[in-house]
Amino acid sequence: MTSGWCRARRSGRRSRHHADWIFAIVRTEPGSVRHAGLSYLLIPLDQPGVEVRPIRTMLGDSGFNSVYFDGARASADNLIGEPGSGWTAAMTTLGHERATSVLNYQFSFAREMEQLRELATRRGALRDELVRDRFVEAFIGLQIMGYNNIRSLTRALVDGRFGPEASIGKYYWSRWHQSFTELAMDVLESDALLGTEWDDGPDEASAAMRRAFIRARAETIYAGTSEIQKNIISERVLGLPREPKPVAS
Ligand SMILES: Cc1cc2nc3c(=O)[nH]c(=O)nc-3n(C[C@H](O)[C@H](O)[C@H](O)COP(=O)(O)OP(=O)(O)OC[C@H]3O[C@@H](n4cnc5c(N)ncnc54)[C@H](O)[C@@H]3O)c2cc1C
Image 1 (cartoon, rainbow, N blue to C red):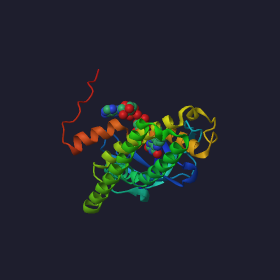
Image 2 (image 1 turned 120 degrees about the vertical axis):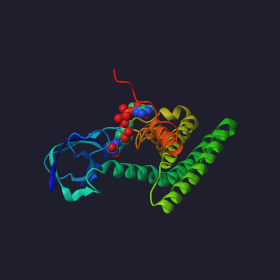
Image 3 (image 1 turned 90 degrees about the vertical axis):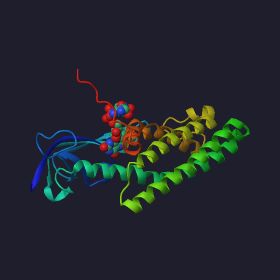
């Protein structure tokens, strides 16, 4: 193959407005099914036949887009790995996304926790022992997240790849952050409802917490939903039987 045509929709690429390239998993072997016959291709975005439609999020911004291809071209030189090995490459990419994204999230979560501690102190919320209890639980969760990261990194250093254990980290941090931002909303009480554009309100720290709460809703969906992470952990980490396939009607 010297070049190829693409006619497909690729949804959810982040920051296309900043990107020059996109990767896509494309079917390069006609008649192949499921995971076979797929290839991992880099496609230049600055060409006719590529249309980018921003997706507006609950925060009102457009951090990612639907990208439509209709007759766009890509050179065979832009193939990553062997033709037909796209699924393996995609799983490696996802393993990195799940494992490495959590590395920096851990530090931003620690910063959010410090911000919330200051906010809760100012608002007198820490006089409530149930709020203090949830703070301690959140802190313990953050430490566990750190140990999970070390485990993932150690595995990558030993094996040269992130294994299915990366799913444990993804499942854990996304649920932790939802629970933590729910605590933040309880600390803010009715002030959690203030701010129409999500950037005003009583103060910047409160506004940042509200934005984090909204953003956290999607965190159990992107980079693989929580249900999919549980499937991976059950089958590829615990070795449990594969889930039954739906019966064709
Ligand atoms: C904010 C955000 C950013 C995103 N960014 C990107 C991006 O940059 N690049 C990209 O490619 N995609 C991106 N996505 C898309 C995201 O990866 C998908 O939305 C996600 O993988 C779920 O797929 P789906 O929407 O097709 O839902 P479906 O696959 O239709 O799933 C619907 C529901 O069914 C459950 N489900 C599905 N299959 C099973 C199963 N076998 N067992 C149990 N439960 C199951 C799911 O967990 C989910 O709850 C983004 C999504 C969001 C919300």
